[in-house]
Structures are given as structure tokens and as C-alpha cells.
Image (cartoon, rainbow, N blue to C red; front, side):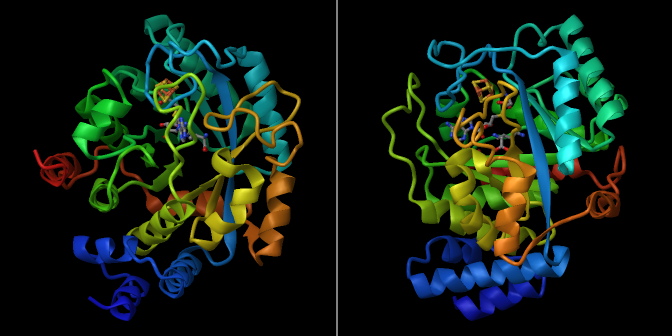
Length: 371
Ligand code: SAM
Ligand code: MD0
Ligand code: SF4
């Protein structure tokens, strides 16, 4: 196994093997991982030149019926701020974000019982339709697990993306993270969304008990699912949760994972989230090969982040202009909306795609996860 050969393979868009991915993830010499980051930037540049996409984030309801062990907004945490924005207010904020130059609106909520019922899903659909009509931007929904019929309605209402993160593809670890949520239900919802013509995002968490084999398995699973966006986030330990006392993972782990995702997955979108270290953490994530800045939140709206509920929000650093300053320092540019739409169009998600995506990946995630 040789670093040069692996990096050259990735640059030539040849698929990496499990062992090659493991080799990269476990590098520990600075000289080596510096080269991995450089190769990841080269692969990014091939697909996206110097253009970066910006996602506006609207966490419109922080109520949740679930109890994920890592999450500040788990139902039983009495410390987290709870609010629910009206459709009107959400539409207004989305307009403000659109005005500021983001390329997409991410409508996120906890699994709020008020929305997670038949009438509630209709409200959610109405919200999506109104945000879409008023902002005229691509829309991502991150509402948690929703039934098949509602996914279909959300698509009809104009939602472009469905984000639903597994956090890990090790099913034993999953059970400790997403308590009482079926692994297969989340996985199937993602696959159904893809077949309905959504762009899909998958994501993993680091610092929650995973080892390198888990990360490698996740990267290959993402490849096999054909995700359009692939995310890795470091745990931010939250007060009032079972993982409150956990130490955050070493920074390098997330950065190397971003870079290896870029090398293994090539043309996918990879977030640099402002929701972990705020604006301070942006540069290193972009230098590791990320090409989308997520969790842009306008100040003076009362909106929270998920893993950093308030960091840098009121200071106005988590804004399109705050981000653009950092891009300029790195010799990168904010893409135009047309460029983002062209990228989406080039992916041509075909509803009801031929080719047995579902069966193949179902097989893969079973075998990859060892059961
Ligand atoms: N409630 C929906 C759900 O869970 O699918 C939507 C929210 S989802 C976008 C929240 C995501 O933020 C989680 O899937 C997880 O990846 C990430 N997250 C939550 N708490 C976190 C924490 N403490 N540290 C890092 N990431 C976290
Ligand atoms: C982020 N906190 O972008 C948000 C969230 C949901 N689609 C995204 C994890 O980092
Ligand atoms: Fe609820 Fe999502 Fe947090 Fe889990 S991650 S507790 S589903 S808001």
C-alpha cells in the first residue's frame, strides 16, 4: 500500500478499495495528511473549480419526540431552547437568506409531534411550498423520518433534497445513538426519497465510539447509496445529554474523513458545517476538500443551530457575507445560483430509476455492517 499510488488513483477518478480508504484514514504523520488534503483539493477543483455553495439553515421547530443520545434537543432535555416558528415567519426568514446570496434553504426540525401526524405533514408540505415559491431557491428538508406518502407530497411541493443521517453504519453503535429508531426505517426512507427524485444527503458523527473500520464502511456505503451530499460532523458534547461528558474527537479525524470522502466519492457535495466550531473552523474544513458551507443562520431571528445552538449567530459571522470573506482569503469564490442549479441538473435524478439501486445497496449495507 503506497500513498502516492492511492492519491493518484483518486485523482484519476478510479474507485478506492476498503483497504485503501483505511490506509488513508489511519495516516498520522503531518507530511502525509497534508498531501491527502492537497489531493482532496485537486479532486474538488476538477469537479467544482474554485466555486463553493452556501446553504441557509432554518431550524424552524426545536421540539422533538426522540431521544438521540448526542442531541441537545432530545425530548427529555429540559435545558434546550424550545420554539416553533410560524409558516409566515419561516417564509420571511427564507426570503432574507435568499436575498443574502445563499444557494439553498434547509428546512430542519426536530421530530416535532405537532408536525409528525397526518395534519402536521400537510402543514409541513404547505411550508415547503410557500418557502419554495417565495424564495425561488432549491429547498432541502430535514424533518426526520416521514412516511412514504408525505415524502411524495413534499417532493410535489417542490422539495429538492431530503437529508436524513444515519450517524453510523455500524448497527450496534447506531442503537446507542438513535435510541428506539429502527436503522432500516431510516435507511429505507432515504432510498425511497432517492427513487422519488430527491437529491439525498447522508451523514456520520465522529467521537461517538466509532473506529476507523466504521468510518471506512460508512464512506463505502455512501458511495453505494449514490448520495449526492456526504457529511461528517464531530460530536459537540451537549449539556443534559448522555454524551455530555464525552470528549470531542481529535480535529484531525473529521478533517481526514472529509478529505477521504472527497477522494473516494469525487463529485459529491461535502459540507463544511459552521455548526461545530463556528466561523473559526471553516478554513480547515474547506482546505480538507469540502465544497458547501452549511448552517448559515441570520442573526436577530431567534433561530438556533443544532450542535452549536448560539455560537457566532448574533455576531453575524454565520452569514453569507461572513463566509464569503473566508472564501476570498482562501482564493475560493461563492458560486452563482446558476452554477448550483447547473450542478443539480447535471446529476439528473430520474424518478423510479432503473438499475435496482435499492436492492444493491440493501445488500451492501447488510454485508458492510456485518449482518
Ligand atoms: N430531527 C431530524 C433528524 O434527526 O433527522 C433533523 C435534525 S438532524 C439534521 C440533526 C443532525 O445534526 C443529526 O443527524 C446529527 O448528525 C447532527 N447533530 C445533532 N447533535 C449533534 C451534536 N451534539 N454534535 C454534532 N452533531 C450533531
Ligand atoms: C448543519 N446543523 O448544516 C446543520 C444540520 C441538517 N440538514 C443540517 C446538521 O450543520
Ligand atoms: Fe430529535 Fe433529530 Fe435531535 Fe434526534 S437528532 S433528538 S431526531 S432533533
